[in-house]
Image (cartoon, rainbow, N blue to C red; front, side, top):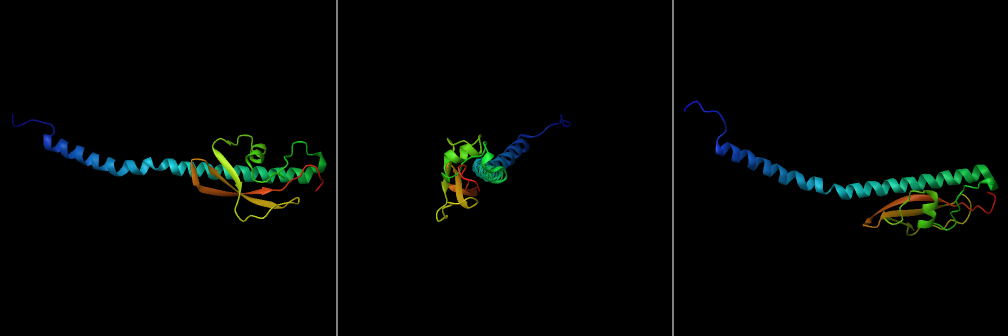
Length: 139
């Protein structure tokens, strides 16, 4: 019987305790990733809106009065304008507003500074730029 192979009960308990300590330290770090992911998606939405606004402005500037697919942004920083600029914009989960202290754009080419935030995370406001485009006048 002196030639038995295997682990003793104490060795198994020590391994289980070590794994428990590692899990207790690592799990909280991974649980908090949802807020980081939400912030990253809000930044992605702001980037898409800013790019959509710049493309819309360029299309209006190049096409003049012939820009049938150009979006009027005279409404400013609103969910309606955001939905028109980016068809996949999700107004049920995100909210667009004019940034506090931002100047009002009222001539072609001027810009608003807008913010977007996820409705579940009102603390994270991401800035983006909206170009003024009025489709009724020639720039």
